[in-house]
Image 1: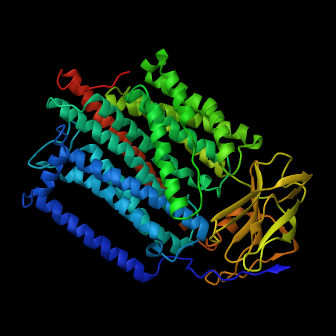
Image 2: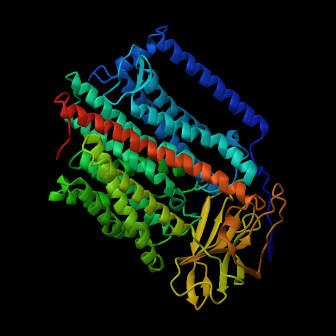
Image 3: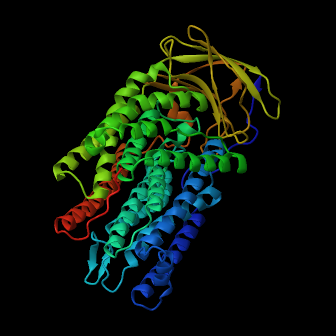
Length: 607
């Protein structure tokens, strides 16, 4: 038996076609010029509709236009961008690389979402005129032009995310396509959008203080609801990094899954409960589940793309609500640390129960010790950062040095955990022997497999020994966790496709081992590689998973160029983190100054 690819892959492997690049550049330039013209006309009083729009949106409760317009833009942009992003991941997982940014329909939604995010920040900056100071933490731009500090941060997040799009094309030209969520430029796209949600929470806080100074306030029930939704949006933004695990095609070790869950939960749920009040952590988790459920339904059932699931977070939310019944609620930093510890231990046990029911692969004993050693410090740091965020929103930050130490230590703990998680090995001179049985049809070939691993590849309790097929269309992603039949021997539990454009491989993760063996790979003319056939029986050596999963990557890139490009992305990411820290600190200090002066006592939501 010899199964051949029906159609070779023909999509380009480097950057997009020049015509698409020029088209996008022209469109972006035209839209930018139009927006600049509107901004200039507004600030010089040549138009009044933009000012009237802000007044109408906030008329009921007296909200300022520099807050209502950005909130409207952010709310719409993030929903559209999230749908586009999850659709894009499913398209790449199910169909492989695309022919460029204009050839993928999901990219249009992402582009709109990111551009609208940038416009949201710029509208907050541009809207105030005639010397109006938008909030007590306004930043002076010119003699008579002030902007809310959170608006500047949102615009920076939008710009950071937007420049990831053209840089992604440059990255592909230099290093080949990286069909993975965690490509450096991809992290810019999702990182900027995700962190902007913290900016909108801060912007609404600035607006709330501004309204209170004018004797106006939003009803408590509405304020509580909106803030809970906002922290739910923050939870969504911080959870997007997990998408490859959600789709069952994780290209990194499983220990990253609990790590990312506790990081998102620690920041969002702790901050929500401390700042908003009783029920806010559960409300944020419910909003997360509702929105992700809708997106999953649209992507899978409406668009017919690869299926995905998502974390639960309800267990962690309930733990935080229960902890708030103790006296620790009045000691925010202690509350954050203990809350993070609960999330990183008991919360992960609850998540494991959920994970093992709905996700493709269970969290096995093989990963638990290392996973906890990585997740617990990160969870505590995330809880402390969530507590700092809530304290900043209330104007109750601790001494500057305390905040700096907490943020720096948390970033270092996360960096150490990520570096440890990225370290993976491939067994040298080890192989797998296959006996395949044809169970499909000539048009849609499928096989079952008997697999024998050579000694030293995996122990009796590996994280996974699986066969994965993806990028062949149809179901999108097909995975099969093999059944162990003896020492080093495994067998299929269901058929997997091995024809057409499917990329089918055996994957093994055991401790630090992360390796794979190709079972079937189609011929790829742009890559100038031939077919790897699925014969009836064969033996092949293990190679790094990335060599198969990211077949399009170039191996001849300069190490110096690669390191330099990654360093640029890292520095930009650190700048965004510093940006939110500076913005929160500025707002908090201004609240403290006003309270100390006995004027404009800032409202605080207490439980």
